[in-house]
Amino acid sequence: MPAKPVQDLNIVGDFLKFFIILLVPFVIIGGVWGYFQRALLLYGIGYPLIYSIGISMIIIVINNDINDVLGLFGLGNKAQLSLTVKHAKAIQSIGILIGSSNFNEALKKVNALLKEEPKFPVALNMKGQILLEGFSKYQEARICFERVLAATDEGDEQHTLADSMIVECYSMEGETD
Image 1 (tube, rainbow, N blue to C red):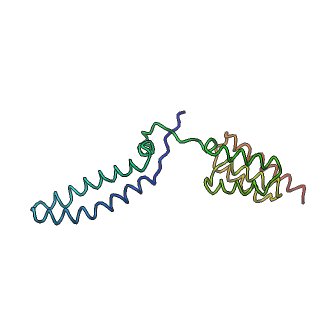
Image 2 (cartoon, one colour):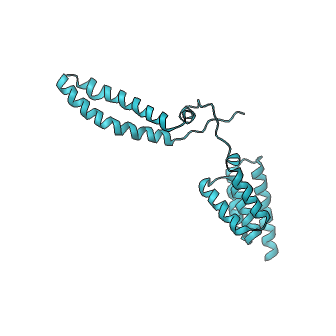
Image 3 (cartoon, rainbow, N blue to C red):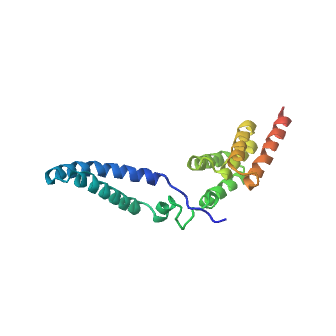
């Protein structure tokens, strides 16, 4: 199944912002000019709408990648990188820190990654693993794994991992009681 382009709705907000900022002075100036030329509808509304839309579109295309703009309409030819590929270095460094039992530093890095991507299943699973193995915080770890279960499909690798880690949370919690 081909990946779909990501729709960045900030582009729509920027377009509306520029459109309104440009429309107001164009309507005022065009209205005054149209009043004296006896063509208020054309100069006061028609031309300001055309110019505001056109200039706003030019600003959006200059400020954003054309594939992002086309992605709003499902026409972009470039799909966004998956989060795992995008954050491969961070995932690798967190894995190394977990492997070397440096859980404090690993937790700092995974929290920084989760601030950037709050629903990233790989990072949530890593945080749960750090909390479980490094700090024995079973309930907090279970919350991380439950968030992964909610964010992923049942056949997904991260879903399966989170499901098995929840079982481990319960078994480790039972051993300490």
